[in-house]
Length: 364
Ligand SMILES: Cc1cc2nc3c(=O)[nH]c(=O)nc-3n(C[C@H](O)[C@H](O)[C@H](O)COP(=O)(O)OP(=O)(O)OC[C@H]3O[C@@H](n4cnc5c(N)ncnc54)[C@H](O)[C@@H]3O)c2cc1C
Image (cartoon, rainbow, N blue to C red; front, side, top):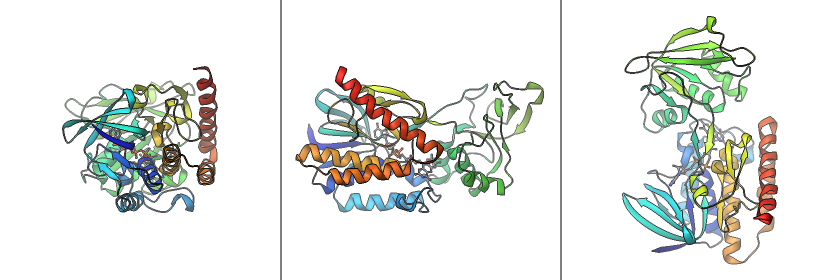
């Protein structure tokens, strides 16, 4: 069985930054990723990132991805692609299906940075072809260059719904509307303004009642809701569409953390159940660390910083050295990034996670 100092599961922005930080401190690193190219969500993101300059605002996601891949290559980090980590067993043995073959690899430390999964939304006919997650739709248009529909209804006005609507317009689709059950747009107004300029209506306090079609989606029935979110049926209306895109949030992809025996807590602002971890991103299972969206849904910028923090923390444990100043700077950048209404709530949730980690570890 192969043995590694550090195995990183998931080669998105969090995993790549973790690998770079650990490798720079002399750690032997292996990244495992299920795709044919590492980078996670970054290569789908053709838009300029928001945020501050230190967090690469204004730079397109795929450009950040290319920069990270170059660094990973120059540092000689080993990367297994087309490889799915399916389990973490006793003594940190990881089961991997690599190019169709079953391989076991043993690690001194593991960083889990598997990202997130899209939330589904069920309504009559939601299983027909022509209903898909906005992230899947983004993969089809920006990675595979396939337009999955010509007339699209987007459900959800968070940043994902708004950005993917804009990218569908850029790819040549007609976006007939964005439906949002809340009375306010969920994402940044700068993204909403872009689609409004194209004349796309955003229907607030509105929901989807059903998809319409026999073999595939041919339309959708949408309906305004009252202040208790109850549909006002007499106001329902039919819209002709061939694609209904669902953008109603993400959930941390954390099965491997459950399987490894980590303790969890519920944090609504971070997408649901998240693994408890300390200020070094170490979970309640010693030498298993977490970083990025799977430790709570945020953004690529925070995923990269958390990855760096986890990478340095692993190096500290393996090499028996301390890099406290470097870690403090990263924590400061994370605090600086977590501003605004959503950011503040996520910051508080992350602080609670660290507090709960120490309380639960003491009594466990
Ligand atoms: C439409 C959209 C727009 C966005 N815009 C911005 C923006 O402007 N600015 C910003 O900062 N953020 C933005 N984000 C958020 C950002 O993309 C994510 O927060 C970020 O990608 C999270 O990084 P990550 O490394 O945690 O996960 P991911 O990027 O999801 O990477 C996880 C990787 O792990 C792999 N993986 C999962 N499970 C396994 C397994 N068992 N075995 C092997 N591999 C596995 C996945 O395939 C993936 O490659 C946007 C997101 C979306 C959807």
